[in-house]
Length: 629
Image 1 (cartoon, rainbow, N blue to C red):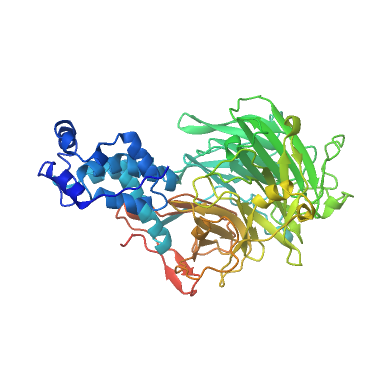
Image 2: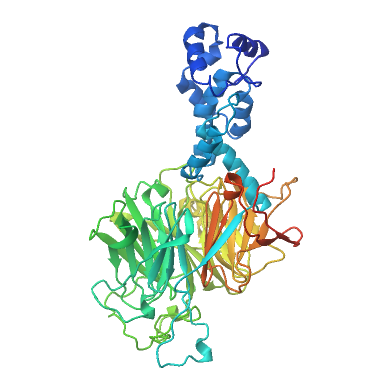
């Protein structure tokens, strides 16, 4: 259904002549008469309104929905026609824009600023709706990201330094002995895992530590050796948006699903699921996918898939109910992945390994070692796996039935990423024949992968892969579905070529973490391997992606990509980074830090500057704590 809008001059004049004379210059009513005059006009003078303005509200909602993709500019133009249209646009139009284009903007943060905005308006000023206020905030947020206007802060992670065992001197070989922090961020909690403790911070006030929780990967044991390295938390991933339910991976290979409960001003953890490990394979990465991420008709409804990958290439997939309860049922499947991409189901009769043959001393664990047996005779002995990701061939913005799910594994090999289609015959999980990314002719590593969130304007079937050479390559995973449905020789090609590349000429450090940020989640943020550098790329050009371009577009807007130093003086990598509409949060080896892009818009405070440079020229600059129009 296509609806064409045309506001003639006679229609506008007729509607304005029938309105009360006390109105603003653009035809909008004032704050005092916004409610009373509009009701009186509709009740007493509805016969004078043109037919278009007498349409039911449901029809206007459909009209607003047809204004994509330039709905914001069109709604602004409509608001100047007459007060009746202004009221409709304010109450319904901007609400739709906020839900469709700026879904990641948090309205709870704007409650107090909006009330202050209304309170400080003059008596003759126009009172706009909270939806308009939120959309304006989102538009200004994009300017803050582009101009690097932000407030920054950081706090020490309490468990950043490992305590030396009493009576034991530490040799130079173990000088890098520290716990690698892990990070997950929600709208309610920020969790930083260091050793066996997750440190809980409030999402809106990360400078204040709420509590620290002691976890145990062996729930049957009441006592644990102090500072046991096998109890270290090595992976964290939130299941829900608030980060109330979290997946935890441990150094001994165990995986737990825990829930955070507020209690007495603090937070306590409840173990909902515990997945034990047959051997001590350190968990390198965990990934989560809910049932609503894909509309495949062969997947049970209300189900959460959890993937865990060990540093030795042991891939495990757990299926749990979406409404998780303690001591509920959970299913598990596992495969051993080698450097050639072969997935072999391990022998379930292998007994749990003791400490003998481990490549890491029992009292020591660091980033340079793998907690895994060194005496494996299979081809998996040379596997070094780093990252795992669950995804779908469907676009989250346009769900389609029958969309294929997949799991991607990042390793050190010539083909550094293998993508396995997932099938669910009889309720079990099976891996299909893998696809791999195109090789550069040499071995490389992949530490981070990401797909755009549902709130992003970028299609969610695009897989962003960060390589050791500092380049992020983008792959179209719909090729998995097309190849599986094709007949003949074409289906045998199982190599994916990148459809886009993002690199910085002045920064080629390895990619350690990936995330998306900005009001439309169309900014790609890369955590580098040195100096706590965060690289930001505008990937909005991929929003309308459907098929690969045969040649570069003729005209491109000026790119304003930049790289910032999150901390003043450190050589640490960014082990984790998580973006949102107005914030960017990350962890180094010893500190939790954040960039707040919304604060310059909501108050006139001051703050420290952050050093950054733009990729276009490499000139060092400093951020501004205030937004300038």
